[in-house]
Image (cartoon, rainbow, N blue to C red; front, side, top):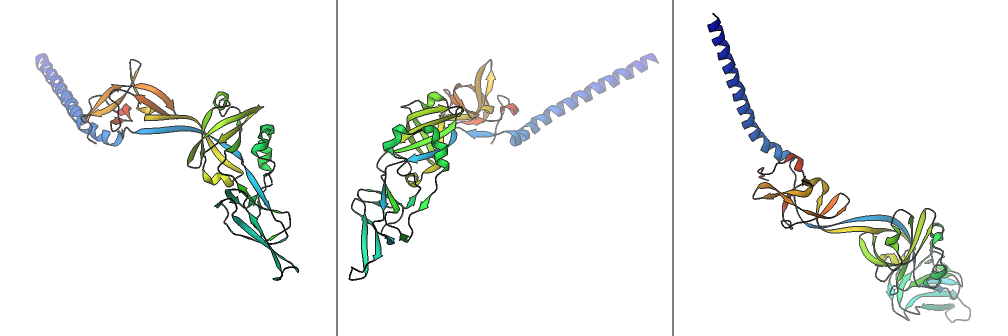
Length: 321
């Protein structure tokens, strides 16, 4: 009986081992079939391109430019000959004023306002034209930028009825450099970045331009800077105060997300797709900005496909997409 019982146990054990082995084989084969399906949902493949990443600081700017004021020579009704914002040549008639006159045969006296030089006409007067000018910039207290900006009150000079001596418009010389006063927190931008003489990149809406640092002052937790720009977006010529962005850092080249890095023995690399298979290649990190990595490498070029989700991949995995 013991022999029969032992034989049954051996048979059961053998059957259990066979069943377990069969289940393991099925599981392995199933994994081989399921894994590509999982890849399809979890894998993220990108194509390398030359990109630019920037880090900016939003700042408020106060603009100083060459402005010539037009005053009404007489009291009367003003009619402009050119539109607001239009550029005019020297000696162009920008407006005329009609006033009642008993001495004139028609009963009206007419005075023309002529442009003394070329420039861009602006009919919006803010009262700071003679306070903020390039001629007085040497004595400008940059710490007062915030206060001056809050006191701006635009006056529409394009009214029909004007008084004698009233400022009715101004001519902005848009061929001269424009000065921009900016104020920001002391820790927003490193002091050495705003060193006098440095050229920095400035953004206004979607327009980028270069400006030179003329002067910088620090007071408590604020720092103020005066910039000069020879070339700038045309629309800001008519503004006194507007928002800008300082480009404090910038990277250009092949950029990949930081999450795409795969380290081997402290050597950074990434998974690329080579002949529909995943291959690890070593890279050199040339810079980092806003979770983007500037990478260099012998096998890296525009058009190369790479994996941004390396945690779900193994080298040698087949990639069909």
